[in-house]
Image (cartoon, rainbow, N blue to C red):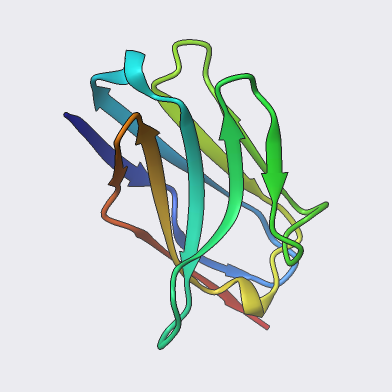
Length: 115
């Protein structure tokens, strides 16, 4: 079993920065991937950043060059550094952790970017 707690969301003006955190507890030794998703109102959740066990990262086209996913050495916290935020980055951000045969989600943290 894995539990996730996200934090760091909030309101910011365009061009600003935020750093999201997701603390993972439970069977962290089984984690094989960590990712951040964004859900816009009325739309499906979309993966925006992913980090594998090897540390390889991938990003959605809309955030490339502006967002950076990372994790701590213990492997129990994943971060999303968001720079040069734009109004279209507004949404609820969710952390997702994968283990063999299952995936777990955080409760979501809202981000609002005003122009």
